[in-house]
Image (cartoon, rainbow, N blue to C red; front, side, top):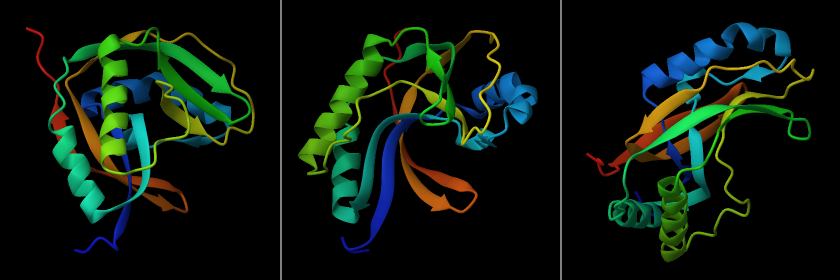
Amino acid sequence: MDDIEYQRLFFALWPPVSVQEYLYTQFNKKLSSWQGRQIAVSNLHLTLLFLGNVGRLQQDCLESLASQIRLPAFNLNLQLLTYHRKQQMLWLEPDRIPDALLQLVDQLHEVAQKCEIRRDIFPFKAHMTIMKKIRKPPDMTEISPYSWPVHDFVLVASKTLQDGAEYQVIKTWPLLDTD
């Protein structure tokens, strides 16, 4: 494969299937009444840094430098359900952002810069999108707080399809156990 081939990539936190399914069941019944496009349970994730179209040589650079990141695992307490009228999106946010998460995002920005990838122009916002293209503002309801133990981060390839996105985790890197 030469460097002319590109993939649309991003770094993310990718929850285990058990976490995705738990979060999905929290919203499944409510989402149908909110009139929008629900994110597939297997696509639930938290984007750390969107990279855009990346060539093979840059991808190799990203993978090499990301493997050198040494940060502790952390818990992400998801409990704030937020509707954004302008973006017509509903997402889940943590009650606070752990220092290790902010350090991870900063280090990934450095990795992208060293690999000559233009940085994401949007400031980091820790959130997990639940629904897009909401036509009717939802009646907000309380959700049960959920503590997600984050043990790794991933590099993901994204393909935009007519009915939504298709994601493929390309590479996973562990965070350090704190025990």
